[in-house]
Length: 379
Image (cartoon, rainbow, N blue to C red; front, side, top):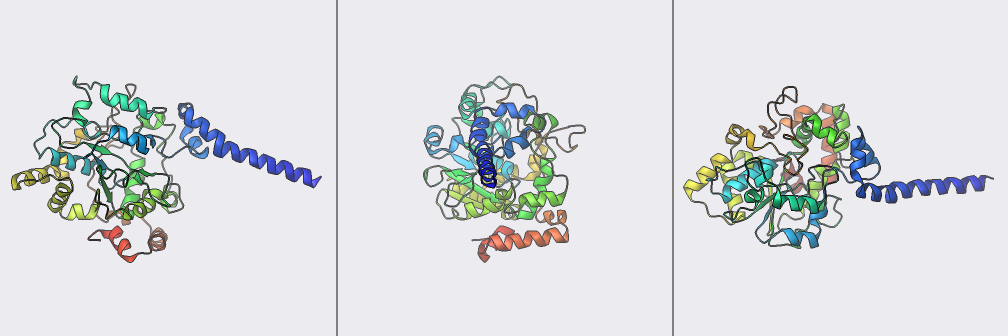
């Protein structure tokens, strides 16, 4: 009798396992929109094995597809989250425009995010078509901005890592397969990333969160947030995985790995380093102009340019983020923050700092790598 029960239990476990790991994930990949109509649809998506975060799409970076939409000289900017992404998008744009472009529309238009769905169920094929056909409110085609013929190179946003041995599921960028495409990676002190991201997740507009079935999730406590960001947490790749993957590629000729702290300490030197990597010779006058426009002060004066508009989703009106009022008044949706170096440690309790530092020591056994990850400098 016990043998039959054991066999039945084993069969049930096998069936549940197959449903969870094979059939249900395959179904939700084909019919993802259904889940996000539910208030907690994003959590169901995650439990059932859906790729996280749900708006991310890896399809554009399959080598066969990547070859179709990229061309030599293109720049893929893929920093770790909350590590100066918008800053680098705008700064590299100013370098290619030599600081003279006054027609910058929005960071999501001039430097679009590839691999980011504007709504549940949207395919890369659909988004690629919309990138070439969408007419903006000013009557211009969106392609006039991101594929402007006056630019010497095009700029695209990502948050993915490079394809590498023992990489994570977000390591999909074909860096070595496409040496003529440039990749800019940027890291920040891990404690700064965690503290900034925890606030960032709570600052999405309610209508955006509703569209994605409750995503991004809001942590109830900082301890819960810390658990998710540790190496074995659901967001462990945000810092630990990202750092490990891009560190392996720091000497590749088509990769520039920067540290946020270095750019903050000496922005002019940072612009020079970027320009050299992008093969743009700036005169002293151009360098001064670009450095000024790359400053946080200048960007804050033009916050309306950094709203992350969902131009490929006609059913969504407005930007993604709440702004300074955290949605109470929703006065703006800009992503521009001060981003001070080292302020993240204030988010941690002493016990949390101990847990974090032990994880850093354990995961990064190379002292040189560990020093650079913490505070930048030469490597």
